[in-house]
Image (cartoon, rainbow, N blue to C red; front, side, top):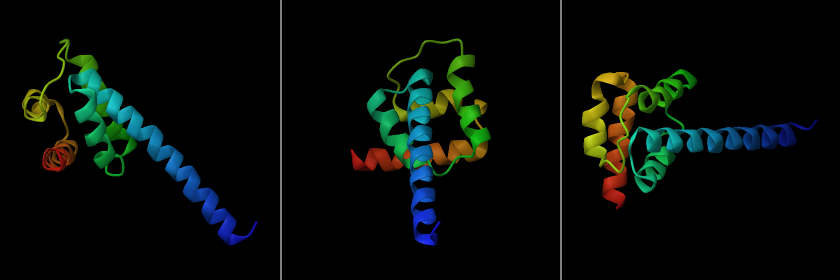
Length: 104
């Protein structure tokens, strides 16, 4: 296989994985209480910054909270889950949330 074709196939595979991870992040954030619109914006900004293990931890926060919180602001979300999140995940969420707030 030619190197250019192999590189293109690799890039397409990575793009597909990123889209799947972005969808999972959005779904996990909605399950944890953020609105779908805010979750989508944050997921777009977080997708390349979390490891598989961090994605799994993010998926657990909504399921273990025992609460049915909905449509929280990013500030409420960060306050609610600060102690439950790894510091790196929290930092990525803060940065993504600020970016989304500025973008409107």
